[in-house]
Length: 400
Image 1 (cartoon, rainbow, N blue to C red):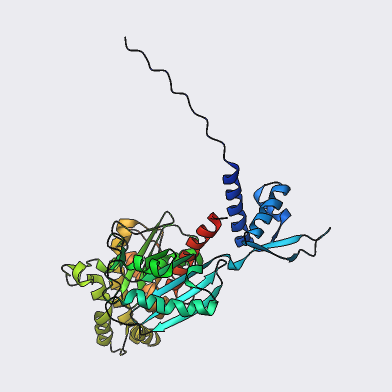
Image 2 (spheres, rainbow, N blue to C red):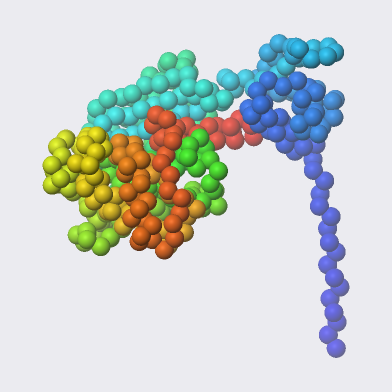
């Protein structure tokens, strides 16, 4: 008879090493200082649960490492005043760049998120291999304004159209960005700057911005629909940005809605049926058919809103096309909300949002919340900076 093997002894978990505990405490303390601002030793004890001697050692260690600094003493309460500590803003820096065919906008921020350098490169060079070169031409003046060198950054995040192909190390579907589709893109930038560089789709980063500081702060599952020079989308599920197998998740521009001309081999042209049907020349033709005039989509939509009833037909026709694309997204993903963003959406305001909502209510299988984006300024750049700061803080706090 076969013998029953003796049960394997369960090994107790190894106790955490003192160095690991110190590292975890240090990182937690730095994040508390980032969240709350200046704190005393007593505040640190209260917020972390560590002992007073441990808090004293922790703060002394972080101060010696140049990560925190003293900023005076507390006042106004009973008893003796206490020394206050804050995160040293200069302990780390991050850079964000928004790349378009017309300009490259670069910002540099300290570890707290305060922008300390900024530069806009107008009319970037449009020749082969100019992608990395244009990024550096925008970044270096922003660094000079901040009094920094490239290697003093902790992370760089670049926003661009298309999707990043990690295997080929290049951008796909970015036909308007000369030099950014060449292989070795990130490798070239990392070698030139000397710090980690990340490239992310611009609409994905706009979604990050809406989640952090905009309309979706309380929503962990949503789809962002972007209407600007082109049409794009981004998907957050379970509070995670979903990129798909090739980085193309959320690319609503490539949907084939009823009424639109079929686009064959879109991977070659980089153009999708919905984008060709509801943007660019098609949008202009629709506007002109309703008696509106203007050179670009934003101007036409602005004119339609200002025209009131005379512009309602155009707005309704445009909203119908947007809604037909969004119906497929709603049916497949069932998002908790759809956030509308981008220059065309901003120009259309509530009249456009309401019309999109009306058509969705009549066509879609469910009716998710339909919100307009609320991020001030450039949502793409805001999202790029949020992401760059995430990387920078992970590096700086993890090294504490």
